[in-house]
Image (cartoon, rainbow, N blue to C red; front, side, top):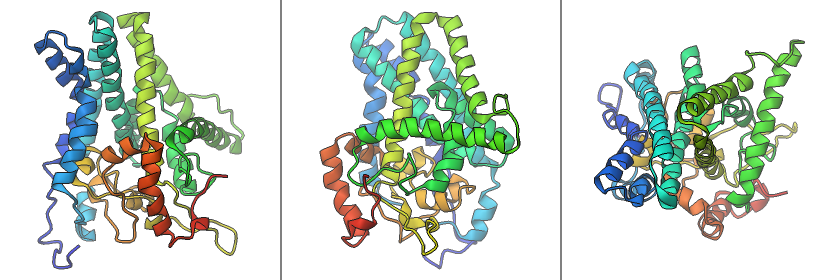
Length: 372
């Protein structure tokens, strides 16, 4: 940042852009409106994937980057401004309203195969991006935000993320032991089962060990994995009562799309990056070199600056509006919305990213997090 921009002159230029993130949970309502206007055209339900993975990448390219950082004294005050918190809170009621709408359409709509698939991807995108909202809330000290995080995770059935991400991934990030850090040369399709199963096992071990250290049974409502999963069970039961058993396949399919969207983001955030062992045999401290970053403005607004990932790992309690970019952090060639699409095509991904990993390590790929 230009040193002339001090605490007096600095302004959050994205302040009134952050509410745009709430357009994501509004996507089912947009699809519904188009569906009604077009007399039930199946393509109406594909508007969400087109906007997220087509329009946003173009907007990223046209608008470009924002590398502005708030001065530290401003950041401290900015942390306490409740305007920013309420934007994340409001995602949840919109998310759940969209869930109910989509369940009703699935059961009563007569969509056809194309429309049904579009509806699954529409709600899956909403609930997948809701995991990012849960990510923002789950890192905070306030109890209410931690519970809201679990509520946001319930529709995707991924409540164990609350435990594994905070106490597993943040400890083991960019090491071979982390199931959520992709290895050099590993395709997303090989990473997906490793991270899905590995993260689930890790979350259960972390949480049960917390109770066993205190000589207590983990089979209690205080277990953060169990109470988060219970929210999913209660939610699903309520929806089945309301809409019938025909809604079950829809709930399962959209959840898979949702948590897969999270995992493809995990894949690209640390691909090939590795913390080295010190002389004492421990891994070096996490620093900006261990996360891929992007300063694309549009995607950062829609993802609450998740793309400033290096600062998040160094300072997980920092709220999204205060996250900083660093010159030493390796940069993705595009925003997450674009790179997600590339990650789904392994030859394209490796053509783009393998040279970047090699350049990051000065050509010495023995330093990268490689497949075993």
